[in-house]
Length: 146
View: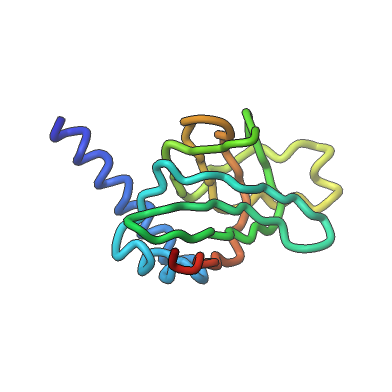
């Protein structure tokens, strides 16, 4: 059991280190008072918009406070999301630098530049999967105190 706790703690620290490099990431870390834990957060929306910012919105109630975190996505976005429904609770959120990916011949002529971050939403109930993109910024929409 200690090994599982150590793995989870390391994953939280890795997530915090990655978030600190993104504009707005430090505010997210501060909201959590340390390493973030997105278990039982909910994917509210994934908006892919060719004319404006694409966004991933994740809502969370955590220790008596509520917020929605908005990840503004940029560059070439690869999304593999499954199970989106009326409720989209995730078991975890992992953020890491994306590995190289092969650019297909049909992508060359349209300026493909795969995003540098891989966002993985672990399954719980509803939406789960991966999104590869640049993260231009993270904003925090804090819910009013109840």
